[in-house]
Image 1 (cartoon, rainbow, N blue to C red):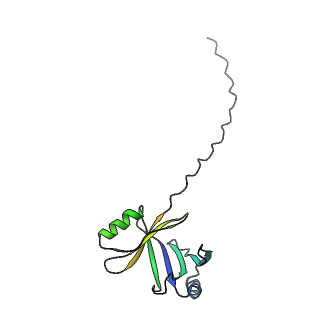
Image 2 (tube, rainbow, N blue to C red):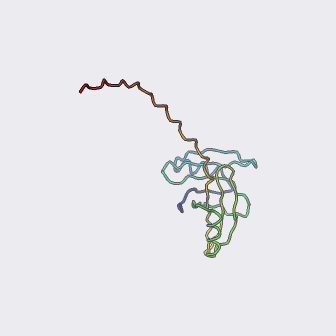
Image 3 (tube, rainbow, N blue to C red):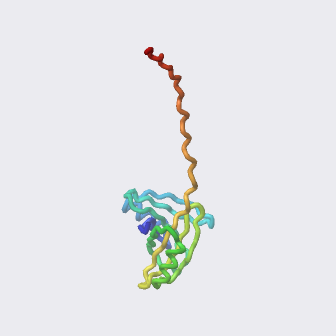
Length: 145
């Protein structure tokens, strides 16, 4: 996987950010009420790249900034590898029910990035095969020798 899959903006003023990016790029915005009462606004860039979200900062000391998410097959293995290469974990693992799990770390230079492991997709039932129509075959008359 290892490609950018989601971009997220944490800001003190989500409404102003939404107006700005919608006006600048024409992004489609969809507000989602979160279990904690906050609003997470999904955006669709319609450009084939990753979509993302805009939200209020979780902590006032958090900088207003964009955060990029990279898709991985195993969040735990990727976080362990990042730590072995000098990363400092910020969030080891957090689950987003029905969607997946993420981790956030600062790389050895101080840049912050996130990892995303999508939830396994539920097995889809195999499509039912249409019963083949049986056609009555007429036996051809045996040829006389």
